[in-house]
Amino acid sequence: GNSVTQMEGPVTLSEEAFLTINCTYTATGYPSLFWYVQYPGEGLQLLLKATKADDKGSNKGFEATYRKETTSFHLEKGSVQVSDSAVYFCALRDTGTASKLTFGTGTRLQVTL
Amino acid sequence: NAGVTQTPKFRVLKTGQSMTLLCAQDMNHEYMYWYRQDPGMGLRLIHYSVGEGTTAKGEVPDGYNVSRLKKQNFLLGLESAAPSQTSVYFCASSLPGFERKSPLHFGNGTRLTVT
Image 1 (cartoon, one colour):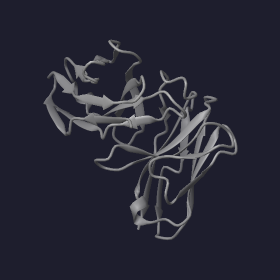
Image 2 (tube, rainbow over the protein chains, first blue to last red):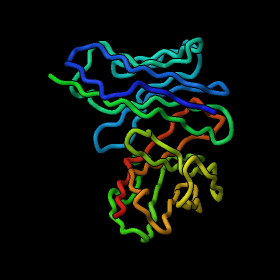
Image 3 (cartoon, each protein chain N blue to C red):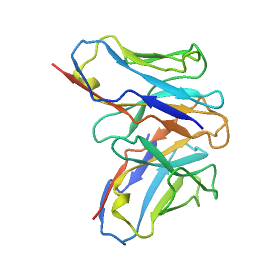
Image 4 (tube, chains in turn yellow, cyan):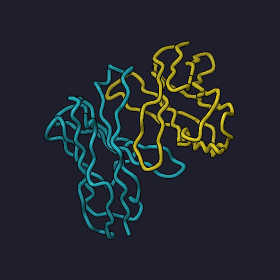
């Protein structure tokens, strides 16, 4: 079956630090990969996506590259801000009926001044 | 532009009580989902629907029932609530399954506590 593994948190960084959140996956088909962000008390918002190997998704300074050879989709940002503090979820959507989203367990990011 | 709307936002139940969570979407999406979110476990799929009048079980369906009488609405029912059902529940909707490039759109969640 499909699965997504994320690095455990929490991740605590100072403002302007470089961020990497690791994500690896297993899938039976040809999945699309997503990063969602959840701010406190809110639902999940799509942050970025990549739909095929070597695609790079980007949004709000965040980037992630779909690496089929290493089955990875690591999230990066060059300079984090306090407002980036949130929980980040890696997810995949595979081909097939219903095409459900499979999530990682989430990584909490805390950015301090 | 409402997107996916969940009601209620919060609810406290006693063990054995019943309730229904309502999800409504205005994006004309075929597919709808119910997930629960628990600390350290990410989001787990409870039930889903691929169209009006259809429902199917996800990973953790026990203790829940669902109905999709109208395309825009997806109801999640708890017939006899248990403390293990204390969680945050999220509804989502999406384009059909073959549109794997399309993301799921989520509501803001319902926080349920069962005492």
